[in-house]
Length: 198
Image 1: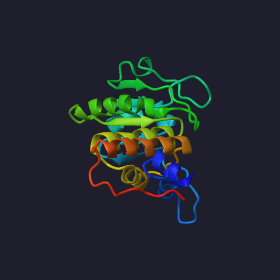
Image 2: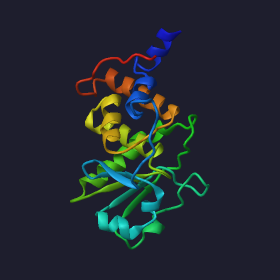
Image 3: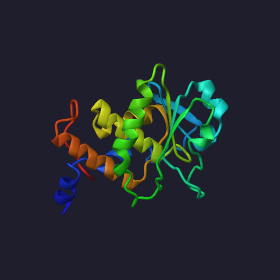
């Protein structure tokens, strides 16, 4: 059974990604900042900053990717109209922060938007969800895998080095599955080999 579980994710285990996300004692840390630049010109942050157009302009943000678009308590109710007149280009993805939600269905869409943002002269993209902790970091990790050929472990470590994050187990599973797919297609640089599940 364990061998079968390893095969389902290319042997790339959620437990090993979780180790990168937690501190030495095994606990996750909540973000200490409203936002962080986690990769050149890519910011991950929370709704508080996303809803402050003046703050975004001061940061030089040209594009906003809302990975929690919606009107419920766990979503962020912004749209292209919200940023009208600010010079900010907006894109929204209506994602739920649940283990059952298939965020991977939006990985390419999100990566395309981030690519377009960075293609602009001095373009900067603010990727957010409600807290900047689960949905938006997952999207940026997927972007690094898809466009920078990082394996899941390196992509998670890259983002975690700059910001405290905690994608839910369902999202981590989807990143492991993306890792397996990209590895099979030869689209990862220097893949570190199969990680084992605990």
